[in-house]
Image (tube, rainbow, N blue to C red):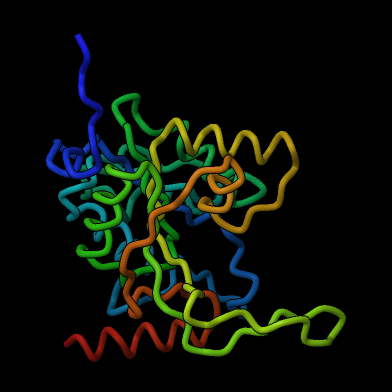
Length: 240
């Protein structure tokens, strides 16, 4: 008996796959001027707590693994003890890519999808999490993005090589959500072939797979410098 293939439209109405979140907070904050960014205070609590809470409250997320430095495992474990979706806090690796792989290994076998989130994006919204998970459920790989405002120049040796069409450019955010098996295979390939990838989408793209882009949020900034931290504090004040 011939069975009709499941179309994208049909898949959107199927129950969402069990999705776990890997929150990566293992960096050394080298550009923060001595401030440990994931523990930096935002509205009276450490930044990492705000990031984890967003995924704790997200209906599409069923469990959470936090990947951090060895010295932060106990403090973060205590800070997130009240979040029942947090299954473990594990030590990261020497690179972000390795940290993501370690986080994936700590997710339960139930997880069909994995949402990879920067720990330093504390203003992530429920809407962005939900639509990215739903897009990954349909397309196997999805990421939020916002249009680029500035004109971008490709520069080689201090000279402009060319100017890409700004209308085609997007700034990619997190969470980036993938079919677990796909992401594991992509990261393994990048590691074995020693390929430099700046985000998880890049690894999946190297597998020849497409990544669905969904609407991001300008407020979903990544706190990388002291100026970013000041902007995040202003955005929180504006919310009030």
